Length: 231
Image (cartoon, rainbow, N blue to C red):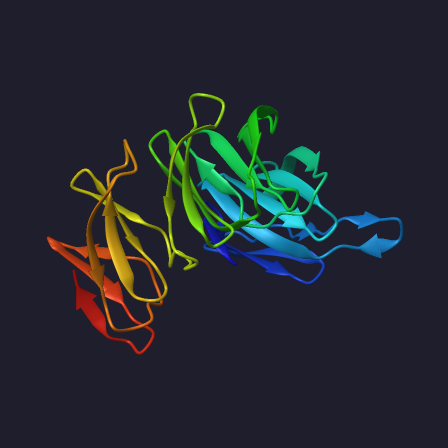
């Protein structure tokens, strides 16, 4: 998807990255050509206003920096060749990058050097996430469990919650010391982020389309037919 950076809106196009500039034109960044093949962009993730990550279909991950001099352009700062394809979009959080790959690995990299800081392996493939809340990382595993890992302790598992073969819908919401998690079949539950203990639950009679949203003091969950439920 397009991402917003300091120079404008970056759009991944066939064979190049184009920045729709606010003022001065930005030089396009070409896709890699390896072994005679021009690769396609698969994922784009913003790190901050001047940095982003791009991943192509050949497994090359590049950290790009927007630079003004000598003329506006995208500069490749670091490159990492992935050993396994990504299952989910990378997550940039608090100076770190989280990768979840098809071989069930979860890796935390330094955002500036793309060096592995910590790594673990899930028992089954990840199916949603990753989402970060402070030093806690949430990943849905096998559409059966919501797993919480500690970003400060080598991705040690802190807890898991059985989702009953139902997928998490959208990013959970942290509010009032609780994690509000919506499942696609209509269940909404409140989880203690420290212990993983499930508190109040609510069953709506609709398939949910997005995660919970806060509007002032109201918590709303949208259903697939456009209805907004207050929970």
